[in-house]
Image (cartoon, rainbow, N blue to C red; front, side, top):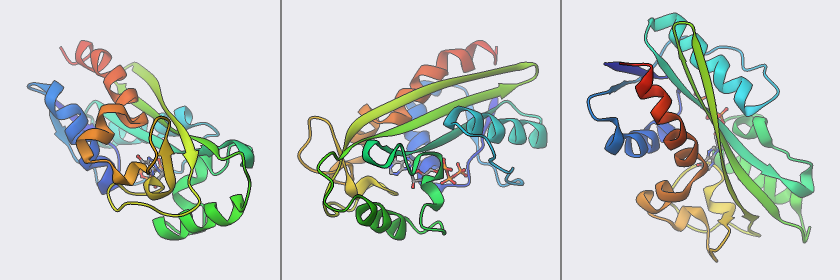
Length: 191
Ligand code: ITT
């Protein structure tokens, strides 16, 4: 029983293998290097479905996809679905620096990581959402994780999510919430 993981982001693949690894049992996760669809949805859920549909169409296998990002209240929810290319390229550091610059001295630093997990197989589609609330720091901290982790401080923590070990992050992150929530549905539709 095989499921294709419809992401080109190596950091996501690494996290998802760990998040799903323990609970997948006999399900095998296959990487995906097929064509990337145009992500022209306006929500995380729509874009996750677009990616999962494309991978399912291309491989014929049941497909899982992740669409995620950081939404900052004082910026009206930006960068949101545009998180990966906020600064115009896919450079994580440029994206973080632009976020700190745009937020400046703003006192309301509340933000959340969001993740939509989509599952698509023949005649069936399903999406689950995961949220990880916190705030944007004033400077980078930590070197683990990827993307905006060095500038994101989860609620209940002083430091950043880049100071968590992979296991600590996976126990509570937006990604792990969304994918743990979708797993029972994936199982049902593979048997
Ligand atoms: P795929 O579309 O191939 O899956 P992508 O990186 O383009 O890869 P997204 O459009 O979903 O994926 O963008 C996600 C971006 O949001 C990612 O590049 C990071 O900048 C940010 N992000 C998402 N989850 C994160 C996390 O756990 N920690 C830090 N940043 C995260």
